[in-house]
Amino acid sequence: MSLGEGPPMKRFISFCLLLLLWLPAWAMTLKEIDELLLSYDLEAAERELQILLKEGSDQAEVLKRLGYVRVLKLNQNPSEEENVKLCQEARQYLTKAIEQGCKDPLAKELLKSLPEKGGIKDKPFSEVPEADQAMREAERFFAKRDWSQAAVNYRKAAELDPTLYRAQLYLGDALLQMKKPAEACEAYDKAIAIDPNIETAYRYKGNALMTQGDIEAGLNSYAAAVVAEPASEMAWTRGIGRWTDTTGATFRLPKIEPPVDLNSSGDTINVDVSGDDKSIAPWLAYGVTRKLWKDEKFAKEYPGEAYRRTLEEEVEALQKVAEIAAELKQDQSLKLSEDLDLLVKLKEDKLMAPFVLFCRGGKNLRDGYAEYRKSHRADLVKFLVEYGIQREGL
Image (cartoon, rainbow, N blue to C red; front, side):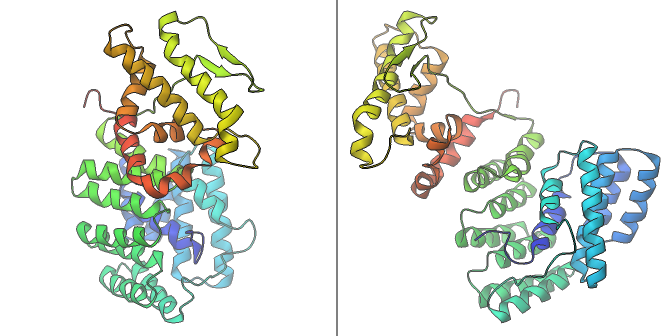
């Protein structure tokens, strides 16, 4: 299941509404316009934006919001002709905003969702007709800012179709608008239970937790969004990125470049002799372990398949380095380098695989991600929080 199914604009309308709560502080006029957008006073927002556009201030931000206005109007059941007009105008404004330097991933997502020609084609929310009808009723109330009636109908849709991710997701949106963040989190949790591999509900839950002042729980929810969809720019920038912007922390994943590796053909162990001889010793195990996988172990683990570098191989090779480094540290024969110290800690924390997946990725290594995540989701979240967030100065 993906959020690309069903009426596509609601996904982005939800993005708009929730993100407006968190947009960076620009000129006061833009902040006031954001309030107009949040309250669905689209005509007033349009007038103010056109004034700013003529003044030439913050062009990319103004153009982006003009695109948002048209996307939001698509939720007001326009005629077929107006639908086409709104879609094409939205595309024009968003394209110009990006050309003017807008780097907002939401603008890029919106632009990708809009057809190059024509308008938005209506698609059902659910294959259950009664659930689909309830969702449409909910959408109409949501567009009118009647949050309570929207919530009633989202709940009805969820009861009629328990597999409907959007029903719980948008129920959370409505509850958040009703200033009920705790109940919104419950709805987002139900959406997550339906499909834990969509990032949106985790991220929205993070927003709700932040409004309650639960900063650490918010961070964990944002990290879970990345774990759900690590390729999603929205998960990174509008989740963890928002958290660091709010708290003043930074996010930086650790990097290691082993001074020992196999050559391109995999038959020779290469050693970078520029390093200290003693510090090289643990790394020799990296090359030996990888060559063992290349020569023997891969064929046993994956009979009949051509050799490829795997998550298991990389984890085992780095674990061997950590084991030897820990032994040398214990008998005080080696002062560990920063890289070796990191590997020892990762092994102790049982987080070597998350490190490999997020920091040592090539395609073959990432191929093991989905399978690993099935039973190690919490470890992936823990790694991002404990090894990615830099709290110096907080």
